Image 1 (cartoon, rainbow, N blue to C red):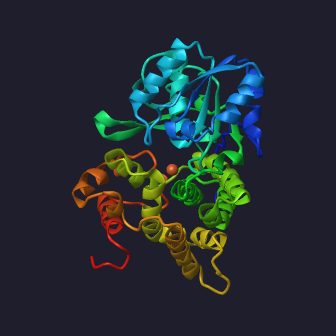
Image 2: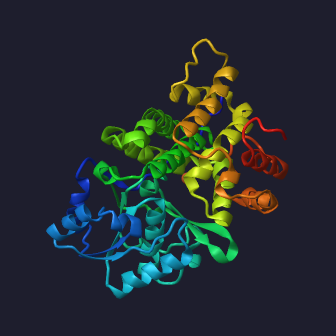
Image 3: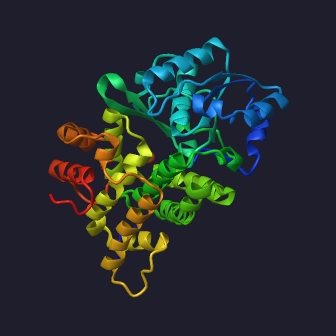
Length: 392
Ligand SMILES: [Fe+2]
């Protein structure tokens, strides 16, 4: 008889979903006892007018605010320190993140430093936050990451050329507001990249060594929803498709952060830390190569991945069906115009030794379903730099 699995499952965020839900943020914050909020965002989101419904909701509830719009892609530790200084100087008692994973991760750390002082580096690692930080409301404006429901933040440390993590249940956003109306202006390349981040996390979480029946349910259904809706969302900003992607992203966020990730994220985070390439794009490029490598570790689950992505697997052997999952990912990436190689996003072969060494030590690597060596990771990077089928 198979051993009965032991696992824990954490979830700490109230989810409020629906068109127009961003307008309810003021009342939600009032419910948390907040009176003055720091809105953490980037200039693109602010410039696109996406703060309007949030600000209107705050004003209606009598919650004052100020805006910190300096978040960059792959946010830097210095940015969190500056944002926290603004929160403290402004007497803010709550933080609202409006944006993608970068803004939400940045806001998590700003909420910590804003409450307890210090700098981002002081909170690196696991369970280093002494108590609950300023309450955070996360309002995603992309369909990637799931950071709105996770207890982790990834911050770039330029000095050390790496991404550091802050992980503790204390930084769960208190509320995630999923308003699909905020996604209507999403540029197609951003929908594509962030959607592929969600898809990668759903697959890595599903096949992770730490997956449980609860995370499997979340990740597999999220994968089904992403695969069914991403093309339509990219092609014409279809509201129903975007809303489905938004919910699926939150589902896989709850799933993967309980299950862990794997080598795709270990390798992709390393590329991002060195070259600053978009996270979702590097994930999408690396994903099929790592799936091919991992197939042998859990062919039954990869066969289910193929089925969830709409592949006709009836009548196939488990191994054949599992292989269809890799093909399905490649076709989806191509359909939404993800570049095919890491060379296309500026990665060079000279960096392989440094990337390999850092990926080996990356926090996401140990839950990869198949054992790996430095030589395996270096070979995977080499494959990611060349078009599929190119000579070795
Ligand atoms: Fe990710």
